[in-house]
Image (cartoon, rainbow, N blue to C red; front, side):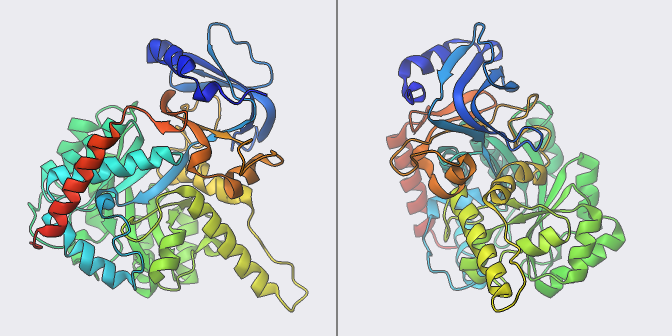
Length: 463
């Protein structure tokens, strides 16, 4: 058994010597978790990539002139999709690990630290978040960039995504507090023209907004005016802080106004009324759950709303949220949601003759891949290893100490693995992690940059 091809410098060199648009890669001998309902899981199978695209999946594919990567003893799976992360905050990781509630986060981070951020701090935090995402197998990340104080702040966040090679979604929003240029949302037209003129690129654009005016006033709250901005630019909308009764009332109002649709994502969706969920389901509105955020910060009921989403016919995506208080990886999101939902299901049926309605490891991996892509408006591009989609994929060692022997590939990904087992990550057919290391990163230089930015932010009085 050979599990070393994705640790081989010689194989990587052969891959990188070929121009990206002429590159052909054949992964052989893997357990392939396609997350395509029509293809399922293939054992001892091959996957062929041409350029940036998956072109074939199946047994005994013809190698031709492809660079052959022996993936025996590994699981190939789609890259994870993060549907909501405030990436600019990343140099403040775990600065408040025992945060008491949403108010404490808002006061310390949005009304405090955020107000002193320079464009270079936006770049540093966003780049660190994206590189960490790649390291842990997240190939697509929606950056809910709600600190766009100037056009230069927005530019820095976008350029950070571009420079890492991640499939990035820049969701732009003005800041909650402090001085800013008030250029948002008007600046979105410039941003779209400057950075997002092509539909065939790694980066896409969305409008980011809040559910209600409770936190930061009406200018940032979703409604007909912001919906019109998004429609005129042909971009999706991501709505954060969707909690409780006020958000439930807003959702019913949006449904009446005709501004709910599959192009709109509601984030958290915690503590909503049955009527709100019905409106969301009927309009095809998507949902981004944040399992650790809801539970740890204590948002509304503190219970991720997976049962409510499924009952409304919505299969949600998953997200990280704020690294100032939470973890950085998708494995934890999947396991947290899996454990909480199954605990609730068994508890609800305990002492009765009812059977618990439990989600499965396949469900949470679906949420973390294909449904995440759909939530980000990228279902046709990524989220499954379907021929014709972009080659965003992970090679995970299944014969490492913590994974062997391989009995169930999906169970191994969801319950057994972590970032150390991911030996290779490809985004659009381009290797971004190899032999367990993120490529093209000067780690000492990055460390100096991150520490310098953190010291500036922490030692500068709030504006």
